[in-house]
Amino acid sequence: MMASPRTAAASLLAALLLSPLAALANSSVNMRQGVTPLSRDIYDLHMLITWVCVAIGLVVFGAMFYSIFKHRKAAGAKAAHFHENVAVEVVWTIVPFVILIGMAIPATKTLLAIEDVGDADISIQVTGYQWKWKYAYLDHDIDFFSNLSTTPEQINNQQPKGEHYLLEVDQPLVVPVNKKIRFLITSNDVIHSFWAPDLGVKRDAVPGFINASWATIEEPGIYRGQCTELCGVNHGFMPVVIDARSQADFDQWVVGQKAEKVAMQKAAEETWTMARLMQHGAEVYARACSACHQANGKGLPGAFPALDGSALTIGPLDAHLGIVLNGKPGTAMQAFGAQLNDADIAAVVTYERNAWSNATGDAVQPAQVKAAR
Image (tube, rainbow, N blue to C red; front, side, top):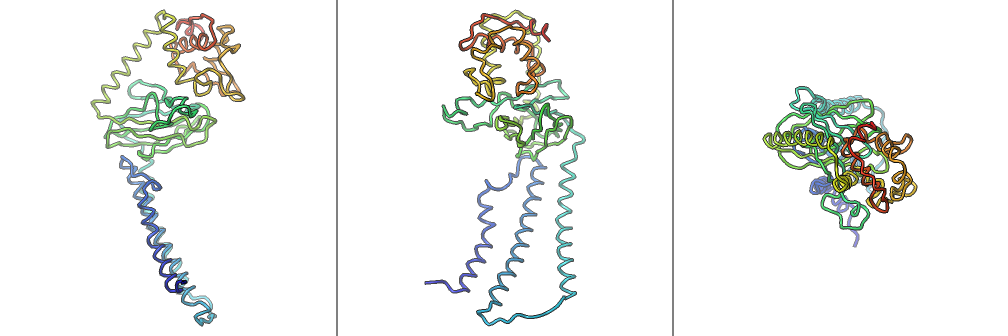
């Protein structure tokens, strides 16, 4: 039995009224409120504009559907002939103007707050690389690279994917809570985009330019984001992980980072054994090289060359060091001279020359890397 036109119209109106609530029930399709005052301001502005649009849609479509139903030909309605009405034209000009002004006031306040990067308690320079982030704490003389730590086996579907698949790193960005953090965002190669949704931060990282943003995180925890600018074949492999800690824990972390930096500087002056070089080289290779050349050294045919049995890795040592230090122009091979210290480069070159089927027996020392620079 077919429903009457009146029943059908009532059902349609009910669906229109309930659809915003249905969307709201599934918060996964909505913005996050986040853990910073700025992110909540952005969320509140988003919801305000959303409900204004919903109200306008209900009024406009309600009037339209009512008119179609009430004045349909089947009900005997006759078309009216009339010309312009000054009062109506004035109303439909003033009402949208008032609505736009009402929306512009809170939007302007939020936009001004987003751009207010002054009076920061801590400044961190964020530099995008293909495909990792470098964080430099300008107030503490600390800097490091943050690399994807998801295993190649998970990426290649050889192991079950972890809870934070492609959203885990070897070194997160550690920050204190309840402090205004200024992010100075740039890039070393192509355009990237630094996005941390829980912080309300999203800024493009453009070579030669510095874009600023800020956040005050109120709750300790781990917050994750990603690069949101298509930046190359491994674009999906450069996550953002932020570890917000109490001030005491952050201060303790700073002390540990400085001590580790001093230890690595001293280690670079030592003579390393082959076993130590191979162990450390495997760690460096896993975080800096395996994404392109693969854990087994076979590379990706047509994209990244193999290192297992390569003329580079079993050929002259100087050429191998030169490629790692200076990169190869016109290719995706980056210059790691500014990214890795002497000990890291000595270890990874030693590993590449003695791993898989390679067996040159070369044990490269940090002093050799220092001289090659």
